[in-house]
Amino acid sequence: MSIFWLVLAVVLGVIEAITPQLVSIWFALGAVGGCVTSLITDKIWIQIIVAVVITVVALILTRPLAKRITTVKKTNTNSDRNIGKTAVVIADIDNLKAQGQVKVGYTVWSAKSLNDTVITKDTKVIVKSIEGAKLVVEAVD
Image (cartoon, rainbow, N blue to C red; front, side, top):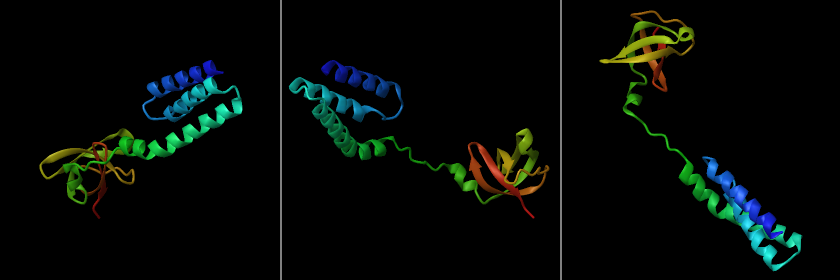
């Protein structure tokens, strides 16, 4: 049985190594615990209980830390200051053709319309949000 637990721990360790997030490290630790237990006793149910307990304890103790480490925080950029500003369309905005540009102050941005409407050149628009590198705009009534 110790070979089974050892192979399981190695397989889970390899899975952990090739995945970008923490997924199986806790189970690998439990398998190591099962392997050690199999050296002490031949009773499979005791080995399974030890493996499950070690897995659960490791998960409870390390999951909050792992979650905090792997969480990506949103960083505001200077482009956020454009939201709510008025801009002028300098190239027709057509979401279906993925084209359109606006000028906010002295800066030219790629743009798309909020409601998938075509907005023609020289129309004044309000910047509603930013999606990637594009401003999402709506025509001023």
